[in-house]
Image (cartoon, rainbow, N blue to C red):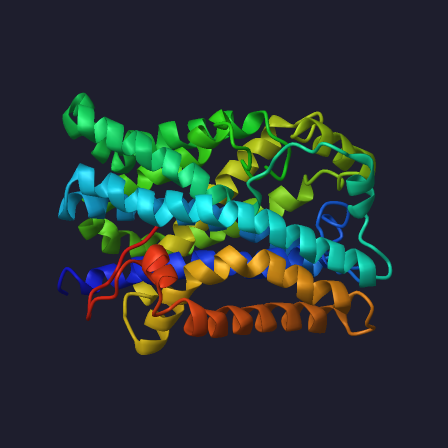
Length: 388
């Protein structure tokens, strides 16, 4: 297997992690647990979507940040730390700066549109009426802002030659994997509600540094030891069984859904008040996160290590689709509130139409334009372009 072909699974896993975001955000509308939280909460709900949303929430973004750290290490190895910072500034920071104000405007229009047609209006609109000065959120673009912070720290460490590069291999050190990583994750989540929120503030979120930053650094370490990944395939079955058992226990201890008053208070203060928390639940949550993420990564390494025209097309468009998908979902799901369609049909329609709009808009206005170069870099022939 040549070096380039071994990287196809990273590209495919990255696009999968992003596109699962569409499934996650679409499912929130039909989840009883999130009915007081999500913009497009539908009166028709089903417990199935509680399981979908919570399960995806536990591993999707940790997987993304592992891949982001892997790609950062790859980029530095192939070029230099200076080129790395320029690349990350152009393809992560600049899209964040461009799309954040655009996102505010589109969100406002989409929510105004939804409020004018949806019957009944989702409960969270009561929050909008009460809160006049909400805490500024980076919305679903928080991952760009957090990722750039991690990349900047990574660059500073490489530039200063701190510990002479020893930190690069830390992510694959057994002591880190089996000791420091679970401890850091547990300590980071101990002060957060369950399920843990998105670190969507402009100010640095220290718990995110301990949580998502740990996965980023794990990805850096995996890049250094990627030749050993195949030896871990034999552990897929026990990892999968452990993930299933920990997930069952996680759901058994899941607290009650937040009330509308708690959501209003969170909108006022910028964070959810942490209820009395059982340490066992935090440990189970961390166990589920680690095992589910490991399972997803190893399955991707084993079965997604290929390139095709379809996978390349999906990979190229996934960044754009993720950037626009939440407002698109609002425009789609608000009218669906007024229909009597079965909840599963509403969910499928939401996901499929969002993906179609995202793919078509990518082909028409992004792929061969400056916007495509901004998001994906300039196109090259038969070269796997790694992006975070």
